[in-house]
Image (cartoon, rainbow, N blue to C red; front, side, top):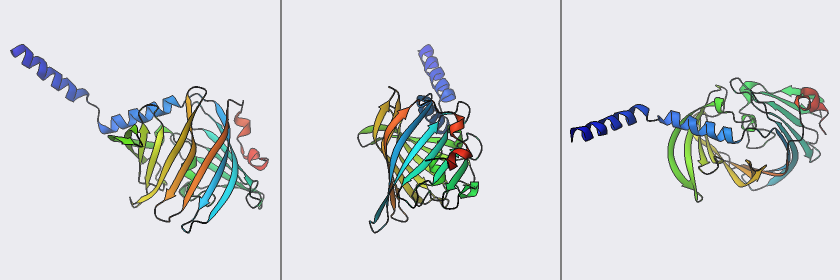
Length: 259
């Protein structure tokens, strides 16, 4: 009987010693989600941006995106506006980074110049949408600290619910609550809280498709601003992976010649 009691005590002590903290569990889930989306190389896609104001008035913009994966840093991306005429030729270049502020540049064809987006302005709206500049950079694991909150079912899918806290002091958010599905480790929903820790926006990912037998991309990303009543829908299509893109396709000169 003593041996059994001693074995139980040892088990309880070892469980207490090796139990994960919520912070460790949150980081573990984030790392696994990142691992599953590593190795795609590059991709291009077309997307439609539908803007809607509180009164329900809508406007639409059409864009193309190129993304290049970086082995030791954040991804590089180039977004080019094709229509309507007033935004045609506008382009944004983003160099995401793991441990330092992202570099972002915006080319304005009317002025024929490239404007650098200052770190303190990353929380500003991108081209009048409900997506901030920082939302459009790749979401590297190192950009946040994490805390596992709970398991929860969302729209019939079993999820991990994490809280993540931006490391960048210039972020427009104090925290984000993220729902990640357990089956494929894809984000399904993100609640954003502003600098006053007040609910600001919710981003919902819809209709995931799988590419190359491994990489999941949402057909739609819907961002609603709870404070203004405005919303933005990004609808993605025509994904093409491994196009042979290189760093030469992602520099300030590529902004000016983007067509």
